[in-house]
Image 1 (cartoon, helix red, strand yellow):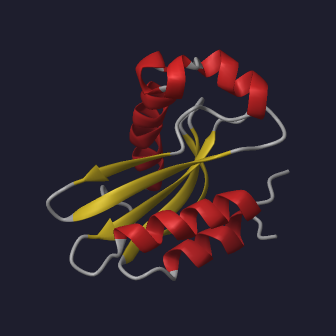
Image 2: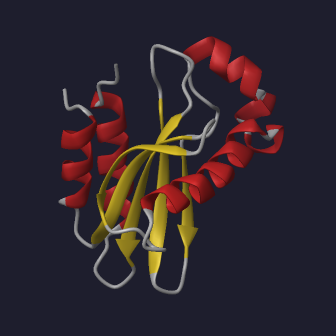
Amino acid sequence: MPGIDECLLEAMALPGARGASLVDWTSGLALGTAGDSPVGDHETTAAETAELARAAAEFDSFAAGGQTFADSAAAVGAPPVEDLIVTTRAGYHVLRFVATSFDSSVFLHLWLDRDTGNLALARIRLRDLAERLVLG
């Protein structure tokens, strides 16, 4: 089971990976980073992606079957959203929420080059990494 650094290194091994981070969406802080940042600063990227993750995780419109954030967090320790994909002209940003044994508020952020990245493979591998990640 990989820790944060190993997890981010595995994410960076994906085709087209430009940067990866583990972010706490409550505080907006990066818990770990690897590679480049789209804006040249990992902390800025973490804060900006945390806003997006927080909105998706807390708005009931994104909950499956009318399940609220509070219902989901209490039931399985994770937000009702599994992942988010933002497509830009130059790349993809994949945010994968990580379920934890404590109050889950972390996600993996992978920044992929649009020309060389494989979005389907990235989603599959991030899901696997999120399930195996050891925090604590």
